[in-house]
Image (cartoon, rainbow, N blue to C red; front, side, top):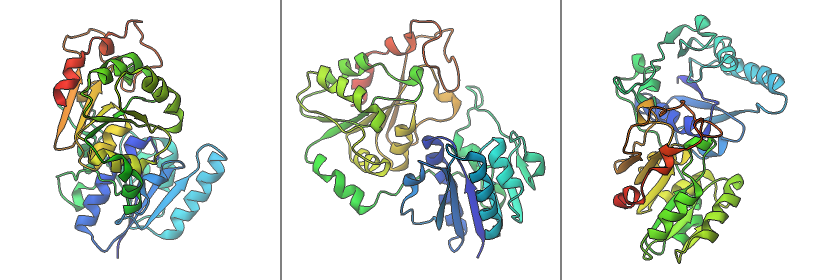
Amino acid sequence: MQKFLVIQTAFIGDVVLATGIIEKLHDHFPDAQIDFLVRKGNEALLAAHPFIHEVLVWDKKQGKLRNLWKMGQRIRRTHYDKVINVQRFAATGLLTAFSGAKETIGFDKNPLSRFFTKKIPHIVSTAGAPKHEIERNQELIRDFTDATPARPRLYPSQQDYNRVGEFKGAPYITISPASVWFTKQYPKDKWISLINKVPSTYRIYLLGAPSDASAGEDIRVASTHPSVTNLSGRLSFLQSAALMKDAVMNYVNDSAPMHFASAVNAPVTAIYCSTIPAFGFGPLSDKKFIVEIQEPLDCRPCGLHGYKACPKGHFHCAYKIEDRQLLQTL
């Protein structure tokens, strides 16, 4: 029985996209032990995952270096056959290089990659040569699987589906209005304008983290639609995915909820403000739509992740998106 460890300690969406590696490994090595290392706070994404033997959790906020050392010792004791590092930072490079695994694999942009047994070129996606993140990740395991990336997947439990069952009695849409990055976040007043134009036959559920609850409540209170429920902070990651799965449409920013929708193959409309799909992180669902400003802006994209405020002060990339563009996908 082979033992694999996949390392991805970045943001929530990055972990979701890396689950495609798990799908592919299981497909080629159905009897293998597959473990997954995440940062503390993201482990709930992989709860009860049928193909993961163990989820390893690194606490990066309290005692970061001490916990890194303990994690390194734990990894060495497991004697993995292959450690696959999706991250490009030094800390996970240390865990990989000194894992004691028979084979250590990672991207060449990791500063410790010279100590890996195999380093893979990290090719940045461009408009002229697009490359989705799951295609880039697949290169890490291509030599012992195949060239075709697997779609990322989450596995909400029956309890997760039961938790959101009460919200599914009538046709509904979900809206995930928030993002860690301001310039990737469709403005509150634009969400309100959209909601007020959604036919009253649809229920509307606002999704997000506990930190998004206040913004969600602002949107709910200001809207005139007769059925808007703010569920921000009330559902887990997997419960949110379970609700998105059966929605008529899920409206999201270029952020983690878009990847939740992809991972349960839910219909999705992704709104791109300061970023662009050519960065390689677009939606993967069978039914997917991308909405963005229809005129070119010399300042867009302004960065890979976005900023805390529009560098130009006008935020045209968001405010010039029209309600009709979003309603057309519904």
